[in-house]
Image 1 (cartoon, rainbow over the protein chains, first blue to last red):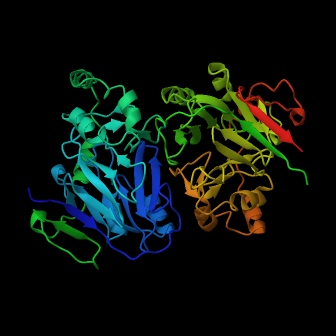
Image 2 (image 1 turned 90 degrees about the horizontal axis):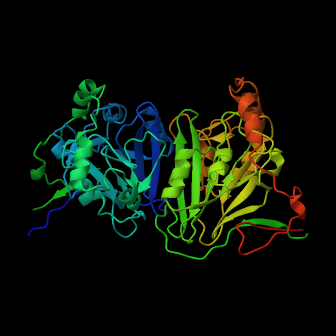
Image 3 (image 1 turned 180 degrees about the vertical axis):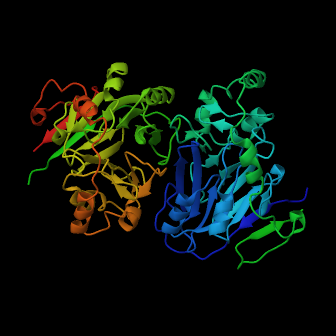
Length: 277
Length: 277
């Protein structure tokens, strides 16, 4: 079997870090909250590199761009876990205010963006990287981003778990969610921190081990889980008819729409995509 | 000069940890949020010890007690940074539902509690400990709790910074605040994580270094700072006439009101207070 891997890479020189959270070697991490939609945004950066390359995950607002600027970070990517139906992501806002930023979403989402990711891809941020794991079920194109497993990567690992898996709960689903969570999230080390896209009870983080023990829905067998979810009668998302169209256009397709054919490699450019198969 | 130190200590045997956040060796840490009052509660535990001794800082609700139970922690202390004027702390609730828990507040607050702390005290939690730092200015009896500086203590350190210092801001003050922050918080290592009691903009954490650079008020000189604060015209806290009386009685004075005279030491009891001078 031929090796297939894809990296979104950014290479810069090294410089002393200013403020680092959690993984003393490199990772600057911030969790931000928006009360009206109970939405979390995540900011990650490799603070050990001179450019302090950074990315944001999901909904982003002016507040977050100001924080990026204050911390002296270079925002490279605005990444989405899926096409949201309950709030407008800020990717378009970011790109209007930080034109060099690339939007990222899964290829399976069928949304428009600068870059598309597939399961198995790694998004590199200096010497840090995020794994892309396919976790359809909340929407078809949902992905979970997990920090890498390896030397100098944050320990414990961290997973940004989409709208479907909530802390001690579960959002609305269509199908496949049970298998997605059990095969892609619950297979991570038990100490892996799980960070939700939303929380309505004031929780900020959980762990894989905790969710495997206490998640009231996902600890059931698959048939029971599906029956529970089928009978929950979720209301129609209030803003879906506005936000989904907005979120589908996560700003600007790449000029070469066939990413499989792309072989762009330069140590001086902000993006290196390497795809071999 | 004679040595004076006081420990609140809890000694238990060792056992493997279940879920650990941030300091792989021991610390389990959770930050919880309450939207209505924009208040943070903090849960800390030494997850390496068999009893998993834990404490909570400031406002605590049923949600937090359920979490303590789920995580298999043994809640020892409910500690307060000061007498709050804007919300009722949950210490009384905790003690009614977890009778063994001891309430802690600073001696300078003049509130009632099971245990009183003074500057220089250390609150021990298994092999972890919190330093008590006097930071009057928001109220007279305000203290800041900072994780210890030493082997096997969380790195970077963490400081729970009272109502006066907010992320990129500052709450209402009476006097002394500037000196308190500059002498007790801004002297901590720059990478120290600062966790606020409240946040209204969705921030969850900052660092000492970041606040020293970007806090719009506390980066001013003292005279300018005091002028700014004097002219802010804070509104009278809506619930102050209800909550302050409630919070002053943080449940049960110790049977011996003169703590200086107390010398209680037992390896089998849940509290060891050692005071020598």
